[in-house]
Length: 73
Image 1: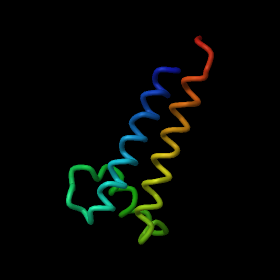
Image 2: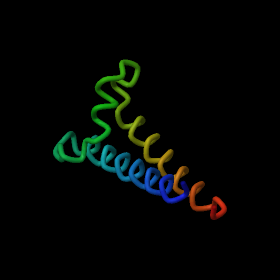
Image 3: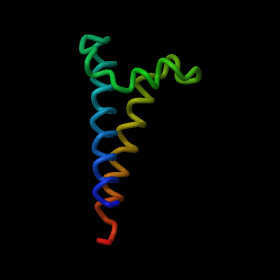
Image 4: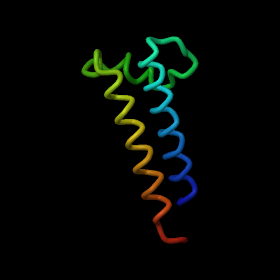
């Protein structure tokens, strides 16, 4: 379970950072838009794409750090 959570956290971190890069470059890097599906399909996130990607990256980092501090099963 520890390895799964670390991997999921790393994936969320990479997706969030890729989304931030995509938003900062005005969509030049379309292949980096993994979180584009989240920000375009959720109504209350419209216009807040950069913030949503930052939140995804921070949550991924927190999940990866929390999982790495778990005791070995």
